[in-house]
Amino acid sequence: MVAGAVFLCCAISSVLFLRELDQVRKGATLQEFLYISSPKLLKHLSLGYEGLLADVYWTRAVQYYGGMHHAGGGNYQLLWPLLNITTQLDPHLIPAYQYGATFLSAQPPAGAGLPEKAIQLMEYGIKHNPDDWHLYYDLGYIYNDVKDYPRAADAFERGSHVPNAHPFLKLLAANMAQHGGELQTAQMLWTSVYETTNDKYIRENALWHLRAVKVGLDVTEIEKLVAIYRKQTGHRAQSFADLARIGLLQGVPLDPVGNEYQLDADGNVFILDPEHLPFVEKGLPPGYVPSSFPKIPHDR
Amino acid sequence: MNRRIFYIAANTFREAVRDRVLYNLIAFALLLSGAAVLVGQISIEIERLVVINLGLTAVSLFGVVIAIFIGIALVSKEIDKRTLYTVLSRPVRRWEFIAGKFFGLSGTLVVNTFFMALGVFGALLYVAHSLHVPDLRVLVALYFIVLQFVIITALALFFSSFSSPLLSAVFTFSLFVIGTFAEDLRGFAAIAHGLTRWLATAAAYLVPNFSALNVINQVAHGEAVGRQLVIYNTAYTLAYTVTVVAGATLIFERRSLK
Image (cartoon, each protein chain N blue to C red):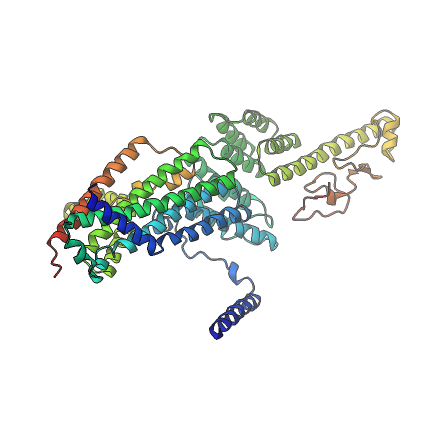
């Protein structure tokens, strides 16, 4: 009876003390070091169970990235070693290439800002999984991000030759070669992401990027009409009603979330509510500074 | 199998069950169900992979531990309890005793693996919502794991036939570890010269080859396992196990039990 009470009290106390210790030493459990950094040594130490170890390291990489991202970014110095170990332990772990390269290539604070490492990771993945067209697609995507359009076109082209590759890779290769960097290309890339992923979060992310691209395209088009109006009438349009009056517009144009586009006195076109249209680059209200971590709205 | 071997095997199985060996199934079930539920929340797109990798690794490691810790005591326990004298005073030959013990422990491990396999497929069904043809390749990996247990049981029995339980455990576990590097050892032998080459080659053939029996990662990725690998692994395990059990019998036959 006494032993039971002592056991219970001490067990509860140890948990409480540990919680206090965690408060005193905040971040101690997320310290940035690897006990063993050599993938070869780890492979040997795994006694043949390297598949499970790779899963553990991949989960650790995801948690590390998520933790750093949640904390507002950082230098992500362990991300590349973790991904390198993961993929060397299991070269067929496709999600580690696909998501890992995204984590690596995204610019700080959203990612590590290491596109060259992302490309290295992807090339390693392609070397070990040459028949997976997704990897060529992701590689092309990274090259597109760093504005290396010839290499992006080459990656899409290589992917298009893989058996069972999605037909849009050929289109992407051609489009990239001709119109690299244009909004139409971005629209095509995000459409392909939207159509091919099974992950609901990625699908939602792609949808909001597509909306942002749509804003860019709309704003470009409307600004052209505003310029035409000025050329035709000799003075600046005060509202969209002016453009509608001479038949350039049917009415007030709406953005992808249903708000009316805005027109200022200088002829700039912009959206009304940038908080509900993340990722928009062209068409932001004058003076508005977008967040480094755009949040996807869930009320639309 | 003759009846005397069968009875000894059945008693060994019963004793293992009585020793609560199958309690490991509870730990296994907790581990696997925990992983199946948790991994989806803390990682990305590897739920199925983790269930197979973790499931098969756990089947393998749990079985290896059971094979070593039960196997090393198979003979010494009977001597300590003096039950061996009762057995051998009956018309039971020493080789029959060794064979019975081997089959008894192997049977225990097969039953244990069967229940764990049910757990693996149950967890797979939970995370993937359905089973597909590539998932059946997990059965090949499970078969290879059973072959691994058979070799380890034979080794534990071999060391148990002449050594103390502690040393038997050390020897068997060492051979398990070295056996996972068998292919590296052969690679080293291939590049060595002179006496080193001979010694390395001899060691490479002497230690069990566990690396060829590990196809966990392969089946986790849905890759097929070649029929030839199945045939040769079976033949190799059979030949190696019979050699080791025969060695155990030879030593046990000559051992003075006075």
